[in-house]
Image (cartoon, rainbow, N blue to C red):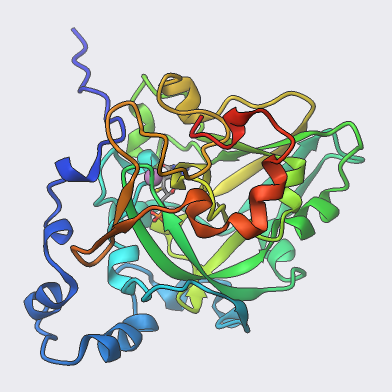
Length: 327
Ligand SMILES: Nc1nc2c(c(=O)[nH]1)N[C@H]1C(S)=C(S)[C@@H](COP(=O)(O)O)O[C@H]1N2
Ligand SMILES: [Mo]
């Protein structure tokens, strides 16, 4: 008889048991033996400290970082400590819990190829190395809001998605872009969970992809992006719930029809295509009115479009209300 463990659906933060959830930054630093320094100083001191997991010396793209900071995107909140952002992760391919940072080190990121196909002038397979070296890299501090109600503010390095769209040369008939994550049974223990529709898949409209906030991250905290955060390239959609920001992309497809994402297929009553952050539309199992800042116990009110309304509200102005709502 095959025994299957209960599916690890998204859970609200109040049910999480990770000790970091309950320790504030100062308590955590104290536990790590580095307390006693003013927290502001500590936060910036930690910013470019070596990550606990990344073997940076082996990363083939380390020469590219740090990249020039774009001061337009300041995050407007205290930066989340690097230690939190790189050890408290969602990456279901490595398990349906937050502590996947160690097991994600098995991910083989070099060489890495991305297949670009569908409604494009010419389908192609491109080496990530070649791609990243011809893109205009910049650093942006952006807020991230997970549907589970935790949030972080981190410095991503990477490039605007619109440069990748131009590179792909889509046909005018393309209306959506779908992205797929690697699904490698040898290195990713999570994909043996048969109730999820692997590979992880997400999508945006071409118009959303051309918005200046739509970002491809290849770096984090001034270094190549750690494996647990989606190396070597992942999407960053700061006005949408975090699950839209798909990691470790191997396939990009331009389509006429709206793709059905991984979470939409897993739990259609709970997750939709648009997934724009909206404090007034609760998840079926919990409220979305507030969020906990990762690395502290502070809760703050959640904002419409995660506070990025001025950039993205126009995308949904002429649509029926579902796009502005959670689904
Ligand atoms: N391939 C893949 N991408 C993914 C996920 C995942 O499980 N698999 N989790 C998503 C969710 S729910 C969130 S909140 C963010 C978390 O990104 P982080 O671990 O870098 O904070 O990644 C998103 N991208
Ligand atoms: Mo999430």
